[in-house]
Length: 541
Image 1: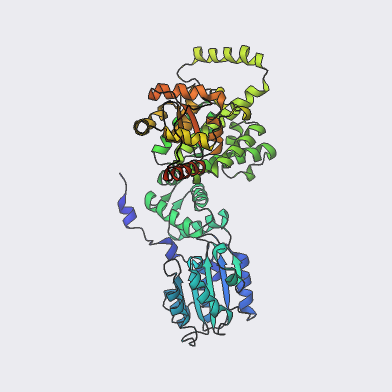
Image 2: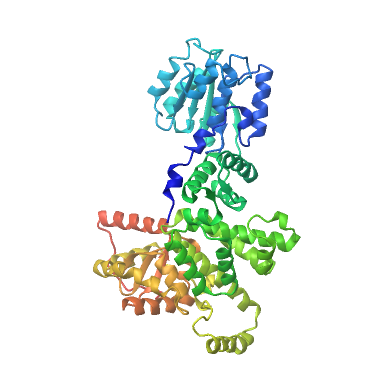
């Protein structure tokens, strides 16, 4: 039974707020920036405007407040005593000379003008009036211009500290008038050390491997690492363990990820898709899993080259030895995964894209194997091997991707010009299209089929746009899918699949979203001026 009593009686509140740094020495990472700021304070060389830029959660606002404290501490410039009225007021967020503005919610010119109106007045409690503007890139152009006028001729007692995650969106005229500090992601070692210190103060047991996992999830953000850590502590009661972090954030264990890579190596597509779907339904983060597979392949490449376990980030030496893959296979799969990783922002369904990536990893490996073998060997040797597999272990036979759908010859790719596409659109059957869209999900049931698996995967990731009984135009998310779907060499496979699933056998023709939109615009323009062509026989099919 889950022990809610432990959670309710934990002594911590928000880790991030409880352990917010109160002096420069408490800050996690950013040592070079801290050193530069301290030197400027020690030498009394204070700029009138600073820009702190970098990823979220890396300490930009925290350092801005600490710099404000060091500017206004009653002990003198550069001090941060923490006990004077000025330091206490800054810590409590009610210092009369330190103003914080979130530009994301106060981006207009009126907000900036109201702030600037106060600039001319002398400080009340400290030596400087300090304006901290967070997410400054969110300001409107008129607000930027209003701020620019003050930055050009600022009073001596005013310091602006601008913070942003997107410095490229800040006007160049602003950038030219500030001292820029680029914050970097915090190293995993620094994040782990910070979490250890907090957990020891909180008397919470932990596994170092769990902290490594949290640091990896935080992706260089101190604030994120503490937020994740707090959730893990709440979930685990008085312990932070690897399995709890994996369960809480839908992660796969290293063992499970190794199993996926091993099944990819064995070309067991049914097995690898089964694992992926099971974990996805249990809440696994698919994009994070994609990244983890890249990191494991990277570890394998490093270990194969160096045999140095200290250089590994995910695997240990025994796990690396278990996955005995050739350098060629590792590099090929890293390249394929890296290319696929960039495409998630272009697809509608991340899991479908991940499944297609797994199919591609296996089919690419299969094709390489076939390419190096003479045709006679392929006919006389490969086929008997498949028969042996069928006799010895039918129920768990590794899936062999159909070679034909993967064959692409640039000279044999179906292509319709603009006029031909318009002709197909003129002959579109709306009722047939609506019926097809309702049944489109049935294609997913064929993704593990030995003959039609690849075709079903590509089609199920696409959207039917124009349908008649001769041709169906689909919109596909990625160019490499389109090239394979339009290959004349694989045309009959797609037609056979369409016949099995939908009882029609049109030729499949794929377009990019951009090309389809262009065709729709052209169709509408022709329709408006009553110049749509009369339907005629569709050639090339």
